[in-house]
Length: 133
Image (cartoon, rainbow, N blue to C red; front, top):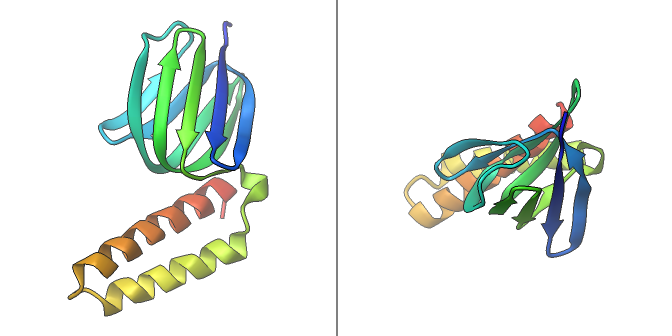
């Protein structure tokens, strides 16, 4: 089966670099599956897991926003933050989730803090999901 080259890059450097058979990302418009020879496009990403399929294996990368650039032979994900499952501190993610849930329940009258807490909760849940916890 043919493959497509994938780079996941953050401001801190490269997180993933390899060839896969399929890439799945969550854009602001919905899920997007990318196969080799896909038409070129650029789309904004939301908080979610990037799924990288190689044979019967699926690797995940936790991504917190950014952009995906697709070319027929390459996918580049420019992420605000990205982590492989092995790099996720599960206890820290659980604590972040708990803090965000407390903020959501205590600051519903302050729209700005509520939105920040809601985004922090999404990031923490995504990290826990990618880590398999």
